Image 1 (cartoon, rainbow, N blue to C red):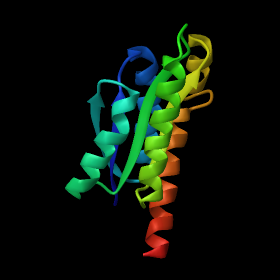
Image 2: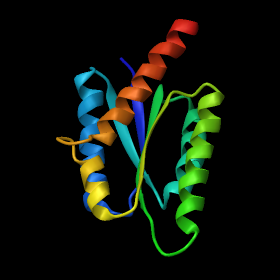
Image 3: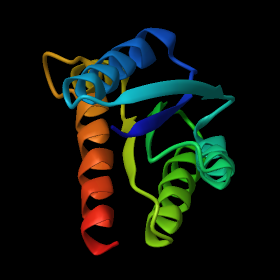
Image 4: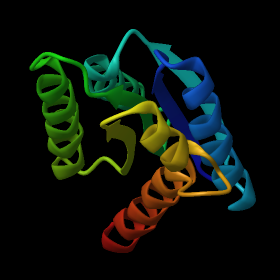
Length: 139
């Protein structure tokens, strides 16, 4: 049984609740345990994953958050840099599922977050577990 850490940037609570529900259900359905921690924003997720990985207490990680385009360039920075940070950790061998959704508006975010629609939280958890299995295969 694996122990998975869900790292969430809790800015849009109602959307995060949906993403978390999907992620937790996928992890539990696969027979694994999980914990959730909250960080201030999506940019802090890769750092939190790196710190948690150093603890050796977790087998895989799920990143959860919502970034909705605003009127400034900040959207691109947050979207691109959080994804880049997670990808760098993945390239270092950490099994991570990226469930940070980036959308133009709240309606798109709702569709992606809802477990009965796109279920991006569940998909991210399944991706993390698939990468964990692959890591086990390669030793």
